Image 1: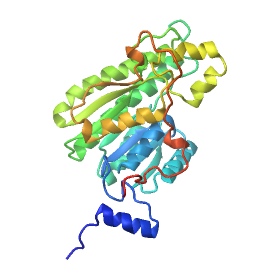
Image 2: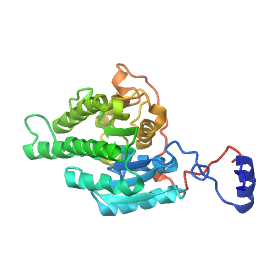
Image 3: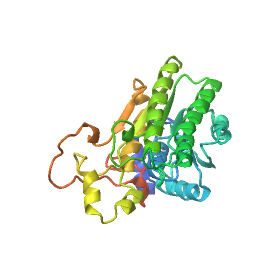
Image 4: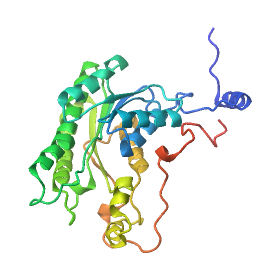
Length: 316
């Protein structure tokens, strides 16, 4: 006769005695338990924060990026923060090349096929400007990565879902609020590419709705990244011109986007499909914003040093 399952209370007493840390995964409680996920652009920012949350919530994660050293560093950080992760692997992928994307998705055949595809890889080139000054090669490069790369990811995710007879799947594509509002500081190729992602995501959501495959577009506001902070530097008027549009008085953080992706990837969002999922702190809804000090921002998991999958403060 099999032993009865261990209750959380019994586990708590046992873990207290042994010093073992209990996790979401050790109890099989994860929101993505048993799901196979691919994340492109996984070496940093939104991609890495999403991979951390996916692994914490029970998913098997394939991290993809164009840089092997960056992937090695990111996967090591994930495993440090989520030692209970079930399966985490990496694969170099240039999303502008269909053969690379196909190989990426095919890698999950031995896992049982893809359940979640987060097409997050993209570029915003420094030479991207307005209609007059944007070089054609920068336009073409931006569309190849930001639009074709998303198309290839969606295409091969659908092929995999069908191949493995999945009755549900979630594909999330990273767009941007710049596809929804205009800016007097243009990056035209980037803006056009993100508008294309919105339209493509909407169309695919309707085409594949009766198969149970959901498509949603994440629309982040500008985020507090090292790249942005280096670009703003000590130029206070330049910084203020952007911060003033946020009702909270601050830029967003990658972890706040990743939490939204986690929701869209989970079955909790089963009736969310074809949406421009805006995570912008109210920026696109604001006219005159409040005065006063900015609100405090959450800390990104990638900046932490202790594991994030431990169950704390619950008696477990």
